[in-house]
Image (cartoon, rainbow, N blue to C red; front, side):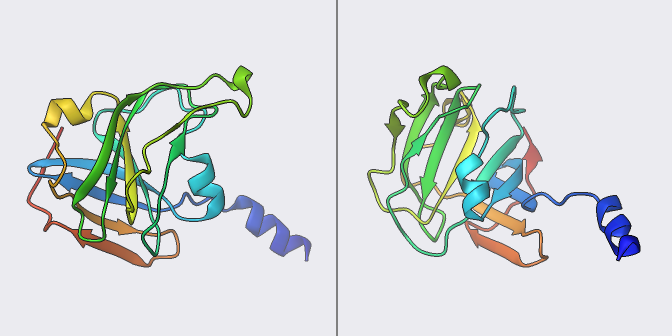
Length: 160
């Protein structure tokens, strides 16, 4: 039993998976949030998010998915997409909400049913000219090895 515990403690912790999200010729390295714990935490407590990174929130069905920025330290751009990757809603430069506010943080977006949403560094939507109706593509792998792919076909994208 002690040997098993020692082996388990020596294994690296697995994140929620990862992969690529692309829009036109721009690709992003994506972290994936799937479980209620992962989707609830999102990008809380992060001090920065590189311009070529994002977090993709995976859901199995369409729903209204407002976000709030409790314990977020950085502003974000958030894009809600349908099952085909079509942008149905977005909010730019969502401001962080201080941990001092407790549960008193406003919500943003989630006014239109969406399958998934993606959080990017603030300014990404404007920088890429993303608009409602555009399509994103994704090729992700969950931490258990299952693939999650969809949206627009992924081009041979250059990192931005």
